[in-house]
Image (cartoon, rainbow, N blue to C red; front, side):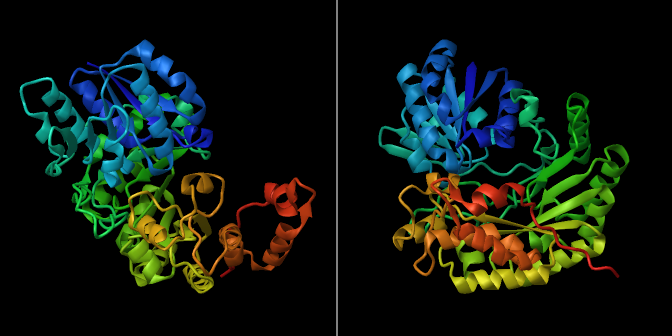
Amino acid sequence: MDLVILQPVADARAAKRAYRYEAAVLAAALRERGHSVSLAVVTPADEADLAAAMAEVRPDLVLIYIEALAADVAARAAGAVASALGAPLIPFGPHARLCPDRCLSLPGAEAVAVGPADFTIPAYIEARGSSVDSLRTPGFWVKCETGVMQNPPPPPPDDLAAAPMPARDLYPSEQMLDSAGFAPVTVARGGEAPTAGRPAPERPQRPTGAAWPLRHRPVDACIKEMRRVAEVQLDLGGWRIGNSRWASLPGWLSAFADRYHKEIGLPIRTTLHAPDVKDQAARLLAHAGCEEVAVPVGSASNLIRNEVLGMDVPAGAVVKAFSALRRAGVRTVARVQVGAPYETAVTLDETTALLGRLEADRVEAVLHYPAPGSRAERIARENGWLVPDPAAAHLAGEAAVVPPSLSADAIAAACEFLPYVVNRPRIVPLLRLARRVKIGRRGTAYDLIVKPFLAPPVRRKVPV
């Protein structure tokens, strides 16, 4: 069967780093079953030509990977595919898991994968081509004569020993590396933030498969994949390891760290769940060659961090994680979100104070984006805090949520200056002044003169 995976991206910037593990590992699983798979990364600029391209390729089935920020692009892409050919459409990905009802209403959609794509979609395709009732495929919402069949998720695998390597050849080599030359790799699945992005309480429980226990790939398989990529990616500078829970099992981490140190030796950068970062894990990461760990902080407000963002992380665990990494000599990054529902000037000050206690080497502040279908979106929408087009606002660097005690401009300014407030407080008054000085109709002095030459602030080390 000829299959096409469409991967809509929000803009040209996202297309530069288009690699997604779920799409690549799904392609690998389908190839193992004898299917022909191709990939098309679709930007808003490509929409006009998509129908013609699909009419020329004429696949038997179209699979569309959807992320929250690219949901509008995906809807238009689905319309273009439906107008060009009669092939059915199957949405999958993070947005499909949060909003299966919306994805099932896309033009041409016959079913939505709400479980891990590589464990659900191959089974559904085989069921469609046989006498098996595909309506009951685990991990799927399927249209039927009586409405929608909402099937439970598939059981988690006992292990990932049989999981194929992701089909990285679908992507150009330049889409595989970030600006520092690091390539992404996934060594574990499941176990991440069981409450993150949870739907509104009044909605029916959805079979998203998010409650999977943590499963690690065999260490040998991880090392083998890294070696294979290094053979073709000659400018590889290191590895960015995904899944924030991958370092939570000391036994697996110890075996991985030892082999990685001896056989790979490139720097590692990763993001980790704060409660998992204890002294032993920090030491093993340092032994492996991990040079930087980002720890999601979210907000100092317990309400925002745990109830809105769904992180389920005590503030004390965050403080202990940074302390453990500092003792192990690993560089740290504190990641915060600014402008979530219930954000106020007080919560911003509390977050600034917490960041000061953490003594992170770097602070990354991003404007909060409430993913459609998440608890954050429901809260913002019910209270009238959501801007008319949240995705467009977020992509433009503007606030998607505007709580009553803050203006959109105040939220954007707080996000922009928070790293400097923590690590370079003396220059903040000058930055704020430059942001108020207009230069004709072209913009502010900050945007035109200061920001292009402003380096991200790094915490200055105090001599011992």
